[in-house]
Image (cartoon, rainbow, N blue to C red):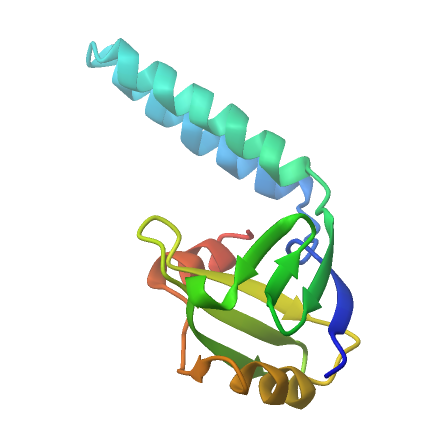
Length: 151
């Protein structure tokens, strides 16, 4: 059984214009000023620190990932997921892009999503089906909301 390899980006790179950054800062400053007026200085500072973190993430370029699926498990760069730590998988096929959902046996990180590029989704599905149960996974409401907000 030959391993499957492909390269992909950590997340799709999105162009955010000046309007997006202005809107985020306007909302953040409004919330911080309101907090300061109401005497809640800690919450106002938290809003500003969170906004700075958000801006740093928004301008960050996505990392290139090398994905390897073999008979021992799934490797994403240096992170290795042996099959006994993966509960199930799902290959979502869409016209614009396909994605691999791995349902992990971890409480804090229940699943990870990997874009499938330059690799046939059916080939990935057939390979993983030898080792794991295929079970439909969908994006959480939080991820859908983040997508709508430009993340």
